Amino acid sequence: MFLGILLTIVPACRAADKPPTESKTYLRVDFELKGSQCPACIRRLVKKIRASKGIARADISIRKPYSGVVVFDKKVTSFEAIKKKLRSEKTEADNIEEEELKSVPELLIPKSLMTRLEKNKH
Image (cartoon, rainbow, N blue to C red; front, side):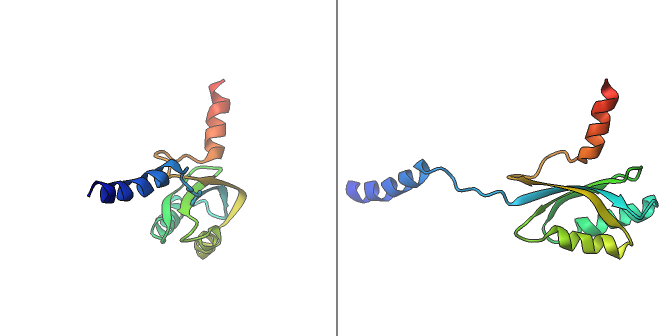
């Protein structure tokens, strides 16, 4: 009986010794929205994006320079699918920056807005 328990535990321990083969499955895309200046249109667009399958978080500033950020599971969707949503509202993404993530951040602020905040600090 002891041998049976030992044979069950040892393979589990060996598996625990191996480093996890976690791949980065989330993609963060920062961009500037071009083509819309209507806050209601931007909010409607954000709502459409958030409702899409695979989207973890999304937001677009309703003030210039209309900075946007989306975090999504790249195994489920792509930025091309998000671009289709943008085109449906007669807008497009410009100055696109991509970053792979292992997890979804708690707080999501577009990088261009963070840069502006940092500059204004000094």
